[in-house]
Image (tube, rainbow, N blue to C red):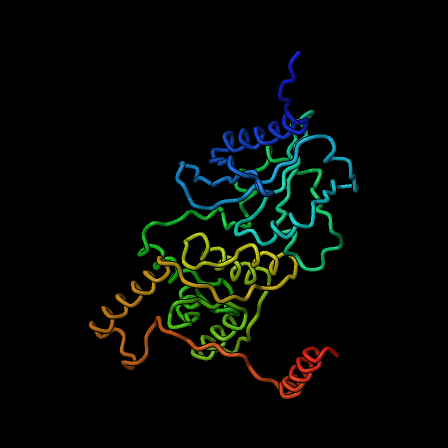
Length: 331
């Protein structure tokens, strides 16, 4: 009997896993694009579609591992997966979130974790990747795996006029933190109005100016509601596509480090259009006499950012200089 080509033993389980991901995307109303040319540690991408079926450009990459061997390392509430070092580096530097999916053909469960987010977190305890036992793509909400890609419950608003109206009216509810979205946006513009800055110091400076303008005797106060308001602004920038920022990195600050993110993010073309829209409204209000600022002052204009110097900086300059010399000389 002539020898015939034989399918590798890993082919059928591998296909079962990829097919399960394709079925997950179909059921959840999303688009699965399998990599058919060469798999370097990514099996394909899923694109998030709105409930009405509109494409969003929000993508996650998926690496699926199928078979009982991937469930052998039981660590209580999770399974631990040990990828090769080259894959760890590849996933961490990938430009979009990477979902690691472990497929159990016998039960149909697809346990998963955002492996890129896991690898980016500080203070990782081990080289393995923990995949929660309670996770299952087939039972998750459709937008769960897109959290670090910036998908949120907030709908995208096509009309920039409505976006501007919302930003002008969106204010923190507590009088101890009188800030608004439009103030964050306009007063955060920097880099010749090409980028947008955000940080707690910006919120504090806006609140202090507003309290002083009102001759208020109330001091600044920040509680849970104010914290949520500030982070909701970050999510708003992403959902309305106003700035290009790494939302996954923002989540590391927010969820893991228990602090507000700080970033300088380039404005998108839509963000730049919003700047022009603000300018056109300002011109109209100036012409009508309802706004009378100096001609060199504008609502949307650059604020210069710089690092503050501290008394210890002179010593640090000397320290870094000496360190560089010693390392360079092989000491």
